[in-house]
Each structure stands twice: as structure tokens, then as C-alpha cells.
Length: 334
Image (cartoon, rainbow, N blue to C red; front, side, top):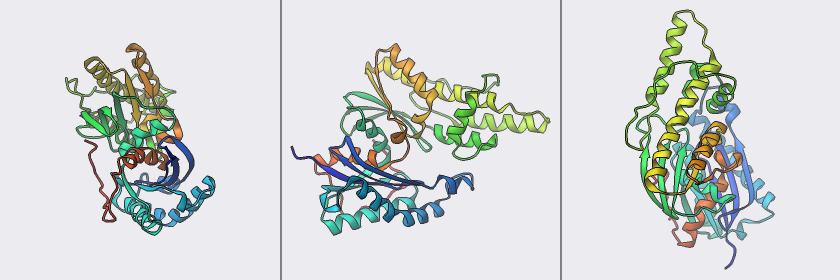
């Protein structure tokens, strides 16, 4: 079979990225420009600034990617792009760029869901075998899925309120840590002890997640201690929060292993970079003699290589999009 080269574009939030991916699993080139330092000044991503910076960066990123690959646009078999979910303005920059390239060079256009991209990031260094459990943990999503085959998803559970990444960021802001909050909370937690009392999420029998109560409890605790004139032991609070937040994930995945009999788990999304999460899930997988797949750091966060990986099965099935493709700030996998 002939090799397939896909130029992939990712611009859903605050990274402008392009990649050339061969056969859905080999990264020929990857270029990423981040806006993190700019948004850190505001304590979070500012959508209007993000879309403008994508517009400024997109041509440079394309040139850099093709130069790294030592290839031309004529060499590509398809153009893939993230169309959802994400910031509307940011997505539009990527999608409109993909349409122009596909039209100019007569290439098929492939629309990819950002969350599915995170799952398929695991195919860049491993070979996902089915069935498997997929845990998506990011700033906007917490979902537990069963994948029976390529693009065959069954949702077991999802967040009922805040996503785990969102909870990390808000807790970080409350204790005075800079954006992005997740990595800074994790770093602080390594130096602390589980000494504060925080409520655990509802211990129900579903696979759903809830982080709103935990986040609110941290906010209230910090407010009350400040009102009393007491110092907050930030390291201990970070450790207590992280222990409870990650335990909720472990508990639900444990239930899924037990009830489904599946012996394979992939973890996807930005929070999959968390070392404590990796450690706890590794222990759980050992308990069930299950295989654990987590991308290396480069592919955990937003990048275009994962979009190229997720586009490959759609390319093989000729699931192409028209030039009327529109973006969506929210889009379900299932």
C-alpha cells in the first residue's frame, strides 16, 4: 500500500501547530507556536488575543513545518484540521487556512474532533488495540469512553459540571499561582502533605465525574482562613486537592475495569501530562494486569501531530469534508 502523508492543522486554543504525519503513526515534522506567555499576563486565555495571534503565526508555522519535513504541499495526500471543540475565533483561523490549502492544491479536506485527536495521539508511539478504555482529561472535558474499534465510541461517563483541568486552573488562581495552573499545582503538591479536609465528590454508582464541589470547597477554605488571618499552607492544600481530584479518576476507571473486563487503558488530554496521575493509573493497571498507554509530554498537550493521527482512519474510509465546513465550540465524540 502507498504511504499516506497528511498535513494537519491545530488551532483550537492557544497553540498554533502544523504537522506532517505518515500513515497515521509517524511524525515527519511538527511545528508548534505557543501563546502561553502572552495569556499568562491575564491569568488565562483571552479569546480575542488568541485568534489574532493565530492569524499572525499560521503562515510561519506552515513554512517551518514544511521546511522540517523537506516536503512540499504538492506531496500531501490530504489536509486535516481541528474543527471542534475549542475557541470559535481560534478554530476559524485553522479551518479557513485548511480550506484554502485544500482548494489551492486540490487535496481532500478532513475534519477532526480535537478530543478524538488527543486519543489518537497514543497511536504516534504505540499501536492502539481494541477494545480499550479511553479517559479524556483536559481543561474543558473529563470523559470515560469505551472504544470498540476505530471511531467506534461508547460513553460510560462524563463531567457533570467542571472538568478536572478547569478545577486545577481555578484552584491555582485562588492560591496565587500563575497560568497555566495545572502544572504549577502539581509541582507544589510534590512538596506538601494531605493535611486539609476537603470533601470527596459524590460517591455514586455511575461513571460520571464532578469537580465543582471540590473546587468550591477550596475557594471557601481559602476565603475563611484569610478572613481569620491564618496563612494558607499552599503546598499542603495543593497536595490535598490533587489527591482527591486524581482519586476520583482512579475510582471510576477501577469500576470500568471491573465491569467491562477490558485490559487496556489510554489516557488523553492535557492533564495526562500529570505525573501523579500517571503513577496512580499505572498502579491501577498493574492491579488488573492491563496495558496503559499515555503519550509522551510533547503529544499530551495540544499539537497537530495528534490531528494527523486521528485523520488517517477517516482518510482510509474517504470521509472527507466539503468547503462548507464550519467550526463548533462544542462537539460530542459520541
